[in-house]
Image (cartoon, rainbow, N blue to C red):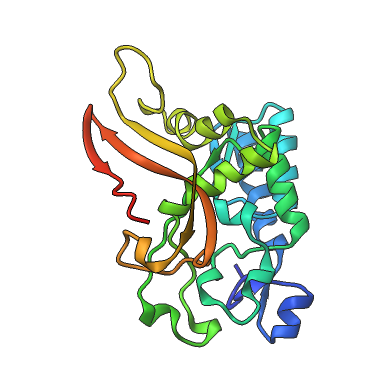
Length: 245
């Protein structure tokens, strides 16, 4: 905790240039090592959330190779952005753990590709403008992620990092397995919780598109590709895109 106390971004040359207290990758990796060690000692499964560093990925990979019961997830911003997104003191890109280096981004992608990282979570964290339009070190960490998780994950498919069904599994069936709940599959007799996706629709992501009351996304102004068109819950259509954009 002391390593990350009062930190605002990844510790490195950029944090020094920006005059901000940094959060070293070691602050995350020490805790990951602790949880893995406890899982090894007790045999109790452990799930590691918000994996952001190369060191954490390697610790989890080695633990799985040893047969330690560990699962892990990351969020789209950790494989889509690095700490340079904070240049200009963009508080919408302030998250915890922080965005890290390009090398860490590549390690996250490799961890997703080889199965070290089991799932992708949105880490959806809405904040009001009052919490974000302040001095960087005072701003609340977190970004909205529900609407951007799908297109950013589909970018991994287009890059060849994941096959389409691997991407689908990391967003649906794998989380269900980790939590030991029903869902995430499409088979006869399953509850019809389904999302219909258009993977090719291309659009500019702006505030007018955001369905959340909060607008704190670092992806504003970015062209995205892929969108949920229909959401079905329990066999009932609960949302349909109007495609006005």
